Image (cartoon, rainbow, N blue to C red; front, side, top):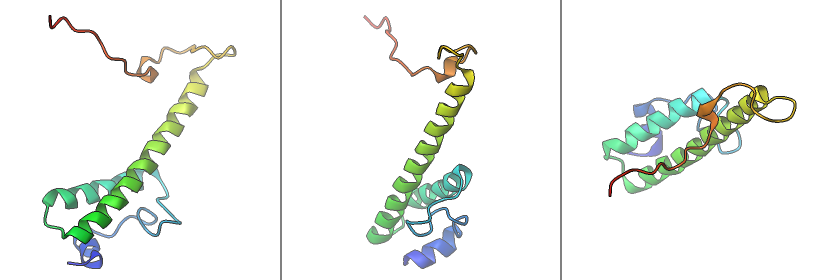
Length: 106
């Protein structure tokens, strides 16, 4: 099965979500939806080597796009919750980095 047949089988990507490398996805939602399609196709495990590599490459690019968009959204939220001195005025603990917690396994 070639890539064109795969695209028909798993559905055409949303416009701009996995088209040529220059255009890229238009929105986070489009990229995420296409990424879900790519992952589902790879998880089925019936793609040939070349097709699987092409899908994996597309998936990596989509995941990076989504991560950048999420980072941008988080930065915008940080600006919105910051006071004039730059300190957080709104309680937003979910914006704090996940730090490892100590457990009493001893």
